[in-house]
Length: 118
Image (cartoon, rainbow, N blue to C red; front, side):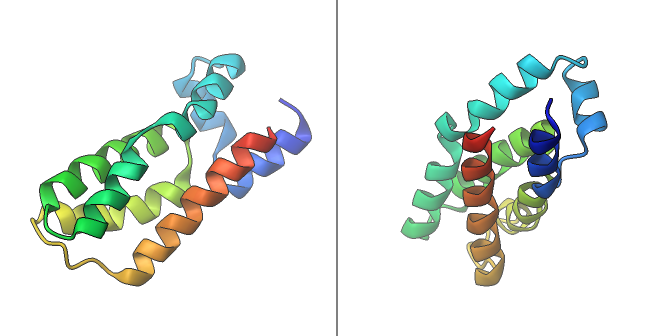
């Protein structure tokens, strides 16, 4: 991993050493998994559920799955925002904090655009 890659990942909240432990120190596997994030359908499913505004279970399922992916990839900025909104949906509510949603969207966009530069 180059210094630039390390710096960019740390900007997303990635604890490099801790995250690479989950990938058995295999950087190639880690980068392959990172690059698959953009193909994960859970973000679009989450946005769809929020836009529909009626199915907290659908929103929860998508948010919870994306939260797990972000945690495994070490994307802590994204994980923190997903953790908050996931709990709202877990309780069966669609009454989420709109500021949290905006931070979540920004963190996701930042993660995707940063990953594309790696």
